[in-house]
Image 1 (spheres, helix red, strand yellow):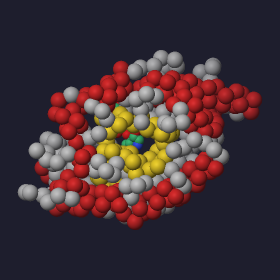
Image 2 (tube, rainbow, N blue to C red):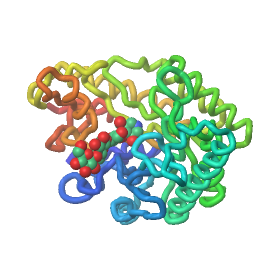
Image 3 (spheres, rainbow, N blue to C red):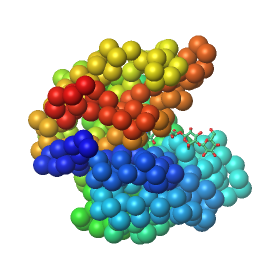
Image 4 (cartoon, helix red, strand yellow):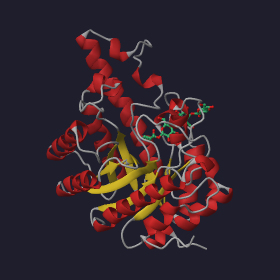
Length: 351
Ligand code: G3I
């Protein structure tokens, strides 16, 4: 038996994994119970699954994840109340069924904005009411800044400006209460550049306006050589200086660059040297997280083991023969520990 990851980092932060409901049984469930003390849904709590039609809420899959977390005394993150992606189209259609974004009449645009914010409020209110006793951290909005450093030009933004962000946080606060922890979550905000700057300024401005944000989620979909540890340190410090909590919300370390070459078709083709490079990466990363553990309350992986990762879809998409396999975690496809596990844990690899 190897040492438990959550126990190893017990004094520093919770250790989480993103899951699909089917992973709550069998071997993956055993790994979850043994090594992790925090849980998040990889897809099941996103807007399109929770409210596929207006007023029709689907709780079954989300409930399974909530129940597993409760039964095993795990911290629970809710991902995500509001997003531009994986959100059903009905949100953005006016009462005649026309896309709100296409409306040009100012009066009708104002009505649409009001309608959309009402829908947002109902969505947030209904979910938070149901799970407020169970959820420890809420991703209230996700990925509201675009890669180019502009606000993401989603229907939410086109129709309401940044008001949707404020209403989402205010509603969540009102329903969940003062003790609830509310997060603004994004990717590449642990990387220096225009996106990080915009995101930082947005968080600062919203806090100045009194929007109830408790923390920032750094997704951390990273690679072997990118970004630098220094950039990530700066990011964590930057948000800590704003007085908000930091969580690492979707950690995975791709073995590929960008775009992913997808050159390895199976796990067995991945050279040991690549796994060693990944181990070094995990070591420096967790050294940083531990060094800054006062600022960080949770480190969540975007999956459990290499047999199930969204990065495989990405590797396949870009690989020449459409087969590419990625291997971003510290467990391999058979749930065996990888060199990255020992490096992250700071224990000698016995092999
Ligand atoms: O549910 C359908 C299924 O019925 C259908 O047969 C199948 C065929 O492709 O698709 C299934 O939906 C997929 C869904 O995941 C559930 O498995 C979608 O195609 C697929 O696009 C979707 O991908 C998810 C992605 O978000 C969507 O943007 C990934 O699993 C999920 O890991 C990923 O997670 C995001 C975070 O929420 C936000 N940050 C980035 C992160 C990685 O992209």
